Image (tube, rainbow, N blue to C red; front, side, top):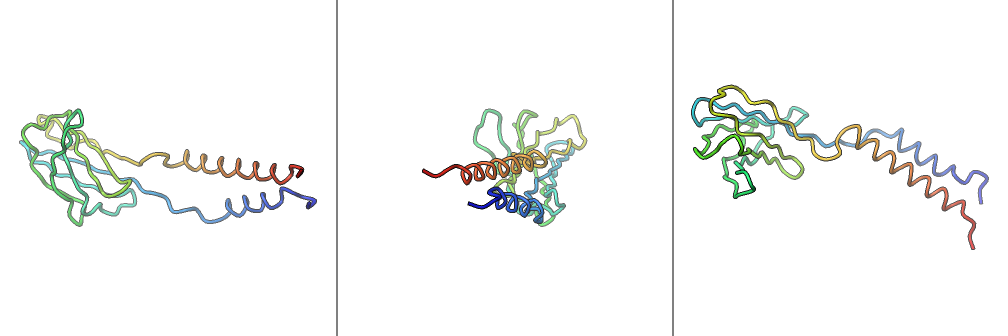
Length: 154
């Protein structure tokens, strides 16, 4: 048994803390502008600024009915479309840019005639909370490993 049984644990933890940060997931951000009548234009991009090209756009009715396909975004992350007449403000527009990259927007009221608020969707455990959770898990793993190394063997 070594004189400093926790030394390997501290070296491993220090190496992980000083290593460059891991690649982070990026959220998708969308904005929707509804023009007079049923015409609308959607624009979607990732939080990095890259357009969400070829994202599938659907209209989802309330209560989880069958979605209506509206089309795919172009290379600039834009899609112009006409809303079905039955679409009311309690329906949602879903932008699906691949696994883990979905955004939902409310259908704006036809009387509003102005741009809807920007909707952002960053997914679960994003940002500082996920970093704290990961560091806590790392710390607990190191502590448990150190305790197991110190435990007398039978």
